[in-house]
Length: 63
Image 1 (cartoon, one colour):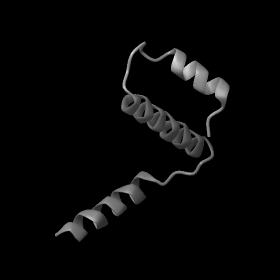
Image 2 (cartoon, one colour):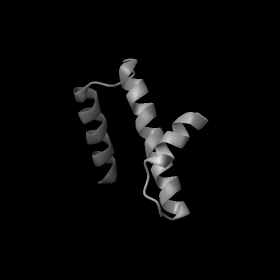
Image 3 (cartoon, helix red, strand yellow):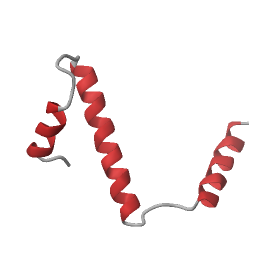
Image 4 (tube, one colour):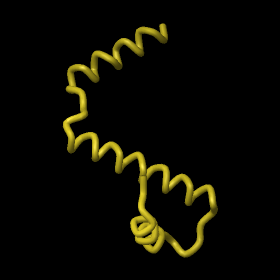
């Protein structure tokens, strides 16, 4: 979730011209990064070992 105040600051720092698609892409990226930072700050992460294990499972599933 983004507040109007945050959105205004974010838009004020964007280029003067861009497409609607670029704006939406940037807003989505900003939201995802903000959510991941929040998760990280709250300890809602997985260990590197667990991540590697999950990736190996996915790769094996592609064979």
